[in-house]
Length: 109
Image (cartoon, rainbow, N blue to C red; front, top):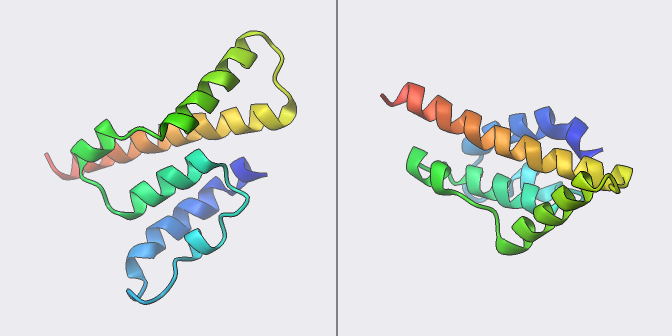
């Protein structure tokens, strides 16, 4: 399941900076099973955004719409187990962005 791969993907993301410029990222090469929003966030973080860019980052409109659909279904208690896992991915992504912003702020006072 995708949510169980979060630590592995984060370590791969950290290793991307050490790749030669002509090498394809293992993160990007192995993400066919990752929800689109997850891929969007990974692609964004790979670019080493500034703290300001991290704070203002938002996933695409379709991803936001999907998240709203999942939240509405969750409020109505009609989420399938797959949808619940997908909603968990959105929550993890939000935490990841917030943590990264805090780290940047701590390192760059």
